[in-house]
Image (tube, rainbow, N blue to C red):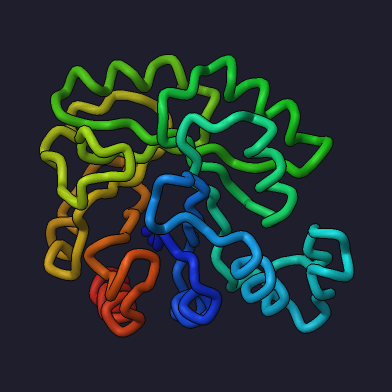
Length: 233
């Protein structure tokens, strides 16, 4: 079960949550989000800790000269209808392992982005967020099959940044695609048993965020720890 903690933006909090053994770490690059990464704070406080051999960011012109250890979480950059060149820059500067596309990105845009990143910058996996309200929303997945590595199903809402509410997880049984998926939106410690009860063969993980915050972008480390222990017990 993959556990992604999204909306991280404070270096000390990132280090503490990463040490718990989470799988993926989400960094939001949408300027309108209260969790949007402050580039200098994230680059200066986060990446130098990834390796004892790491060179300071300022000494390598922006690209971290380091290889993440196996037990460190994968870094996921979250973007909303951003320009491909901006995404490429963030992948380069923050050494991202994945990009999560949370807007209305077209298959053509994703194809072009992947061709630009691999092999010129670095290969990354792509997560496409799909807003869910009815079974018909799964139809939107078809155009991305074979193009993205994961889907992220979340509650449909007017707010682009998310509502902090859950969609009907019962809809998941109607998903007939071939791409693995995660779920997100309003997930808390109280949902662990319901998560464990999901039997879909392509369900691979959860994305947690607002239910674990003390303020936007700052996670309650003990709450995340409790969630992980209950989920992976």
